[in-house]
Amino acid sequence: MNGPAPALAARTSSAPLYAAGFVTAFGAHSIAAGMGAQSENIGLTLLNLGILLAVYDLAEVFLKPVFGALSDRIGAKPVIVGGLLAFALLSLIGLWAANPLMLGLARLGQGAAASAFSPASSAMVARLAGGRNAGTYFGRYGSWKSLGYVIGPLLGAGLIFAGGFALLFAALSVLAAVTAVWVIVRVPHLEPLPRRRYTVLDLARQVTERRFLIPTLVLAASTAALGSAIGFLPALATRYGLGPFAGTVAVSVLAIASVLIQPWIGRSRDRGRIGDARGMRTGLLLTSAGIAILALAPGPVTIFLAAAAIGAGVGVATPLGFAHLADTTPPERMGRTMGSAELGRELGDAGGPLLVGGIATLAGLPLGLGALALVVAAAGALRLNRSPEPRAHTVTGDPATGEQPDTAKMNP
Image (cartoon, rainbow, N blue to C red; front, side, top):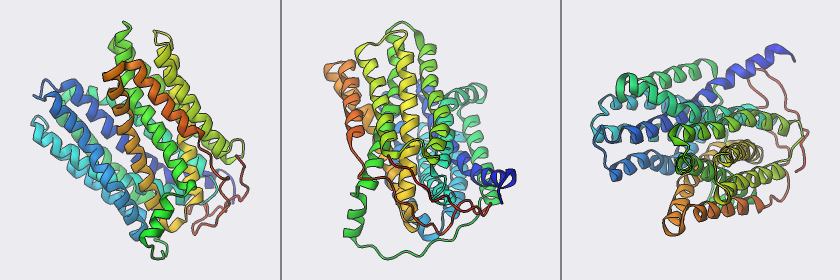
């Protein structure tokens, strides 16, 4: 059956997964921004601030592949629900966030919980897409995560102003709990698929295949650019006399560009208007160009132009990278693949700012940004062997609709 009813069912079954992506982005960035702004009020040294900022990502680096593999073993839905409920429970530790130790424990707990529901949500999105509309699904999923990046710091600052960190952590706890209930009610339970036993050599071969390695490098490079831009755009705005507010606006321009373009790119990909290889390459080159503008010609106008270019480039590359992984991964190991890809993103998120900051310390910020631009462009120069072949999913289309997949595929 085609028409409005199946389309509505598809949206309602996947929407809770988009909300889960929003929760992890909103939680990470609202608290990080709040800690930076309130560090003196709660007695944080720069070293302590750095540690508290890192523990969330550190937990994700170690645990995302583990929980991704677990979702293959027991099913994605239990892992998503369990992760969201754990996030809600552990966020309550933040009610005592005026104590740096309790703040650190809350941050670590949230990172560990997000490590469960984030890759499992990506895997569930891929299975719901069923080999038909992976680009559309991941375009929407990425857009909602980017929305969390946009409003997280702003909404978090408002909540901290109104009631301190306790109110922010309470709001995150309620949001995660409501999302968990929404997942329970609306997301279908997909049984785990039979899996053959893999040897260590099999695993090593899988993570070095070009169909996995290149999209993961694309995602890592995109996230490296995103994390660096979010960190250094405000610094550049201040350096050129625009003030902190202009820096926040520049970051918002970047995020809004990414929010708007990802769903469009996903739909275009599914309709055969853009191929994975060419699209990922274009996205990274556009991102690299935006960073190069910041390195070579920073100024009151170019900062905003560069922010828009970086946001658009990330918005092009990200859904294509995830969709390519979804279309080239056997469904029975989708969770592990998405967990490993998310690990690549976390390493990029940490590595990009470290690269820029390290070189900037020795040779100045323009050279640091220039080095990042070259790294991102180099990732875009890598080529996929070919476009993913159509493959059969155990679950085709959205289980809520019963629609069958369109096996037509595009070429890059």
